[in-house]
Length: 519
Image (cartoon, rainbow, N blue to C red; front, top):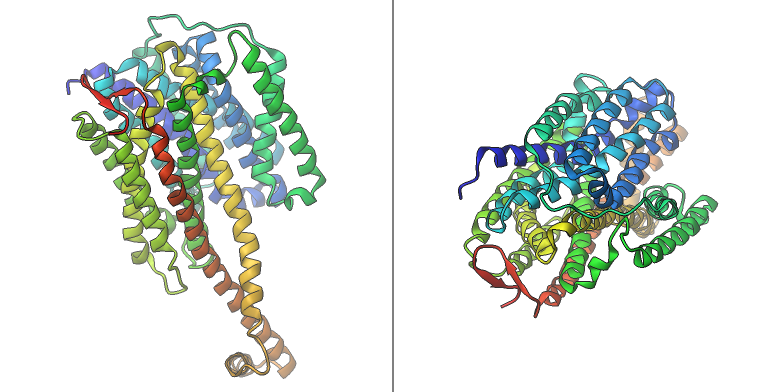
């Protein structure tokens, strides 16, 4: 493959932008405790630092196709980087929690335009035979970012302060802005963009913003037992229904939902949702388990995830090169990747209190290979039927679907962990009885331990009961996380036959030769 210097610079530029957005979606999670202490904020207040960014980013992802057509793809991409970088400065300088939340929303407005526009720029720049490898390099930023975000955030927090998780964006943002204006060109074919439909924009903010807030805050607010969640649900339903109706009747919509009339594009976006669900749910579960149950630090957890992320990036490059040889349909690569992800989940369903870092190594290697096999073929299939003028809209829609999949996955798994922990705690607690010799003996051991430290008998007995209950809760959490991996694996296994929906479609051009979607 002969790719010129300018094209490699474009790949580096859009990958840098992708890393900025994906890392910042997770890097602050491990710094929230320090932010709470420094800013004098409650847990409920500080959680809006995450929710505000996610909601603003989701809305802007939806609008990015229209905005890139209206402002020009290069101009909108550069503006997104500039907004993201400047808001990062003000996030780091914030002295009040609501000031920080405001600038995180602004940062989300900039970040939401990065991923989708970056992918559209790649599609515009590279011919089909080289697009697989270019997408592979770009995909590394999308996949690796959520994995290294907590590691980087933990290291920065331990050695500097929470402000530096934002300041670190500045040099990369400046570099990406300079490279954008120097090397990225506007499309040769003009992309039509109608006037701004302000009513549709309001409906979009209501629908996507409301849905994002529900999924981010639902578990914390106890879902529909909370009046706030009920109100937000009504707002989201009205907003989404109204926005969909508005986009269907509009001549030039903000988000072209009519692209879903293509069966292949619709099925590809179904799998974008599934991919987002599995990627973000697994990235969320492993750090929480390692830090809350096994006692790992944020840095240790990040180092645990790093080899698998590197393997994912390597596999993306390999798949991008191999797909050019047309050895088999892209669907088969994805099918193998789904199978490997199921194997990864099954392997980690055997978690226990004695699980160590070495027990995660090979499952995460398997997951890394599987993600590499899924991501590039899926990106190729998603854009296969789109006209050049529709690339930005198609990228925006697929990115929004993938992000919503990740948000749904995280929200559903959080709720499942909460309810399943109660189930296992109650079940294990049933074994605590004066008629159970094991529990009686354990209670005596704990009581003797506290008596030996000088506690009175009543105090020692009380502490022994608390210690025994704590061990039950800890074991219940281990069983819960093991069940969670089984549920995610079962979800992917059930989705695997849906790949047959691609059968019978048109040809996918991955090289100068045509290749059937399903042999």
